[in-house]
Length: 326
Ligand code: DGY
Image (cartoon, rainbow, N blue to C red; front, side):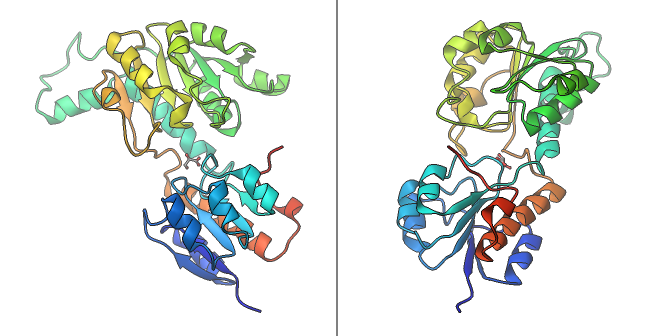
């Protein structure tokens, strides 16, 4: 029998590559090489397994042209780059990397909040430019975190990890989620559930977006909804760029209708709206939420294990990180 072939579309943590190489023939692509839909569709023919990145459009066309694929494992918890429905209908398993990146991503969310509220980037840049002239009674006055109310939209694993940190900072927590958490978990974070997103937006001082991107959540933070928020509010997005109408957010920041924004994800990555780049009180990071050595290693192994399990013919139910949609 031929050794199954696995494509890892660009270099990742070596542990995952080595893990897969013990059993399969593994090809590691080059960064950017597999980001084009037609290229992906036309060149996957010899592969049984695909370890994909967020930048790889694993569309219906790609999957239909490659029914020999048995498994696609995304090197991410989000899988909005994969047409899961099409994969399911073709019998191709899809996996992701939940849990292992929640703490790292929540750290970045808090980093963004601190960065924006306490003007860390701006003040640090000034210091480096020789503008520090000693302690200033009115220098770089920011927004106090303690006692404020944070709204979290998306109280999954990452949302909860954010909530745990916020609670430690003495911030009140409100959340909206498709399903209300049980009262024990609500109590643990002192979190109040809001059925109505608009009310949450009206009341919160800090808004955290940590829900998946789906057709329903696309532009969840629209122009109208931005208009509901307090002008003193700060938006933090570590979910997906398209949860926010980025151009409208940039306009709201310029006009002072929103006080600040911390973004790790963007609508048209890697392109950033120029109006957002020039907006005041923003901290913009290049999608580094899960970017720690430890987390990326765990993500790689988790994706690799799912590929191995599928190619070995293990029952799909035994694979903990398999994605399925109704
Ligand atoms: C994810 O996992 O979905 C992140 O955006 C990248 O780690």
